[in-house]
Amino acid sequence: MAGHDLPETPVRFETHPERYRHWRLDLPAEHGGKVARLTLDIEEAGGLRAPDAPGGYTLKLNSYDLSVDIELADALQRIRFEHPEVRALLVTSGKERIFCSGANIYMLGTSSHGFKVNFCKYTNETRMGLEELSAEGGVPSLAALNGTASGGGYELAVTCDEIVLAEDGSSVVSLPECPLLAVLPGTGGLTRLVDKRKVRRDLADVFSTVAEGIRGKRAVEWGVIDEAPPRARFDEAVKRRLEAMVARSSRRPFRPVKLGPLGAERTEKGCRYRYVTLEVDAAARQATLTVEAPTGAEPETPGALAEAGDGAWAIRAFRELDDALLELRFNHPTVAVVALRTRGSAEAVLKVDRMLAAHAQDGLVREVVLQMRRVLKRLDLTAKSFYALVEPGSCFAGSLLELALAADRVYMKDAAGEPVSVALSPMNAGPLVMPNGLTRLQSRFLATPEKVGQVLALPGPLDTAAAVEAGLVTFAPDDLDWDDEVRLAFEERASLSPDAMTGMEASLRFGGPETMETKIFGRLTAWQNWIFQRPNAVGERGALTLYGKPERPHFDWRRC
Image (cartoon, rainbow, N blue to C red):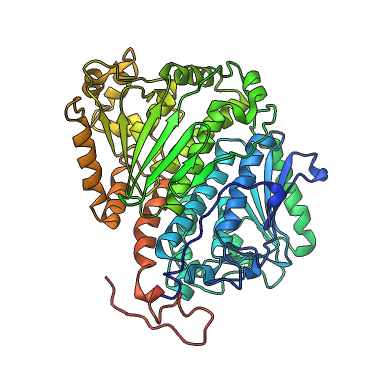
């Protein structure tokens, strides 16, 4: 398909409200600062590829690309940490008669397959974060659709707790991907229709195949939206619902924490932050991701945590890890296998964990732990093979032990003369659940759930023999074999089909119960990876290829 061979420019995920081109974040005075308003007003020429660049596009009708989602993710972080006074979130549009027309079709049509899938995955993670903000952070959200919401625009709306659509005779909601583009909604729309909003299957079937969408009254009757007031009463309905959200908010107060720049040093071989280092060996298609323990005194109370701000290790290190994971995904797509390493004092990590566990009810501590959870989920969902390497000097303890538990394999050195250990903390017992709703220990011991409590009760730290006995380690080579076994394991993994490994890892990482989250990401991995490759969508006469052109798509009608 045209555009598949376009060079991908490096993507940067750090931004700030002062640099937003597509969103406005404000706290309207009429709500006393308790409502954050996010207004989508997309700059048409402000996408990642300018209209006059090769493969460029114009973001018409409030259509979006990755740059829009990067700003949305940043805005949600600002609300979490910098605006603890916020009790409800309003998502609306700054353009007349249009809320959002979804992902820009020309952007999709000129992007590589890998970029499309990573784009959809990042957008899904951001929207899951918006739902977490409500469910775990106590900030419910309202989508105020002052115009049509189609495709990804409706998927953004359905991520919110409630949806109000102006009934003006022309505004509709729709999921037109199947009839118009021969692909599927890529950010959870189908799953949320039936799992979250519990729309009847037959009605959801119609809604998902009617390209022109449905208007207010029918949308309310079918459960696709919550209310469709006349335009003259639209603002009144929005205000009423926001006031109810503020009243029921369970958010806990805390001192705001400003999020400053990470200041990464970047080269073609990776990037270096204060606590995280990413080193890339492009020729070998391997990388090493190292997280360091705190090196100085860390806050021992929530007040001290607020005073330390974004310099606190629990905040800073996981922000850096998040950025490094996104760097891996988007800017190093050929990397096959990643070594997960840690370095420093395990006791320093455990001390931070004990503070977080002791003050779990504090509002700021809650946000810090939720950030840790989101970042570790990002690792769970990253299409790379991860091997944790536990060596002398490692600090796989507590919250950093989660890196090893998230890895596809754990190699722990059986060193004769040097101490090598892992350790557990309360952070391994529940706060950092995976997308399947289980802890990584619970996911590890699905066949023997009683072992979770036994492992958590073990006195630490655990040396190599104890860690193997506990079931925390895959292989434990000795000093003599360590280098060769690790090298061969990495070379072997890098030689295997990346498509097969992506499918295998996604199938193996989330045993146990299925959740809306695992459904959305599992279907993205399977369906979008397949459907985005099919000629019916992206062939020379595919629907996505010919979108906006006078020709009709040509389909291979065989089902398979």
